[in-house]
Length: 305
Image 1 (cartoon, helix red, strand yellow):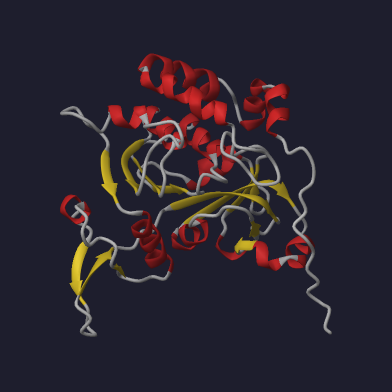
Image 2 (cartoon, one colour):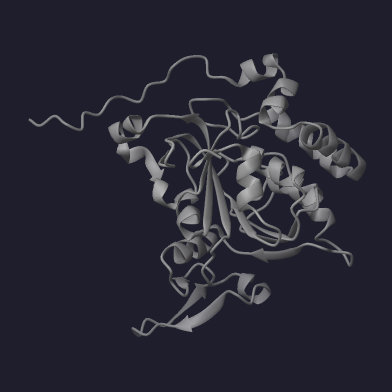
C-alpha cells in the first residue's frame, strides 16, 4: 500500500476482518464484484453482509461460506429470478444464514442514521405491511410532537463499506455518475471505507468538477484501481451490464456442484481481476464496451456574466 492507493489483495487483507459487517453498495450499477471475489479468496468468515439489493455478488459470497447473516431490502437475480445459493441456506429446517429484512427506504434510513450518528430514523412506510411482525428491530414510536405513531429503524454502521466508482484521486476523493444508490450514506456510516475505481486521476481533475465527488477522501482508507472491477454489473461510460452473465448464473447456482466448480474456476483459480478479465476474453469485453463518446455537456465554474 502506497498512501491510500492499494492492491485489492492488500486492501481486503488490511481492512476486512472475520465477523465484520460489510456493505458492498451500488444499485444495479457500480457493484464491486472484484472486492467480493477477493473476500472469498482470502477466506473471510462470519461476515454480516449488508446491501440494499443482494444480487449475484452476495449469492456468490454466501455460496463460498463467508456470511453468517444478511441485512437487506430486496434480493434476487435482476431480470432473471431468485438467488438460489441464498435460498439453499435460508429455507427449511437446515437454514444456516440469518436474515434481517427492511424496505428499500428502511435500509437507506438505517445508513442515514449511521452516517448522522442518530439513535434511530423515523419513517411511515411500514404501516399496512407485515414487516414489523417479522423484524423486531422495526419498532413503533409515538412522536414527541403529537403527530401520532411512526416506525423507527436503528442505525446501520458497517465496519467496512466498499463502493465502486469511475474515478478517484490518490487521496480518495471519489467521483461517480450515472445511476447511484446509497453509496455516500453507507460510506459515511462506516468505520472503514474502500473505494474501487476504474481510473486514478490527478487531484486537479477532481477539483475541476467537484459536483461529481460523492465521497471525500477524508473518510476513505484505501483506493483500489481495478478496471472492470464491477463486471458483470456496469459502469456508465466504461462498460455495459453483462446480461448473459446474469442469465447464465441461474442454472449454475441451482446446482451446488456447478456452483462450487464455478467458484473454483472463476474465483479461487485466478489471482485477481486482471486474470479474471483475461479469462473472460477479448471478444466478450469488446461487446460490453461503449461504441463511442456520449458527452454530457460542459460547465464553466469560473465565468460570470
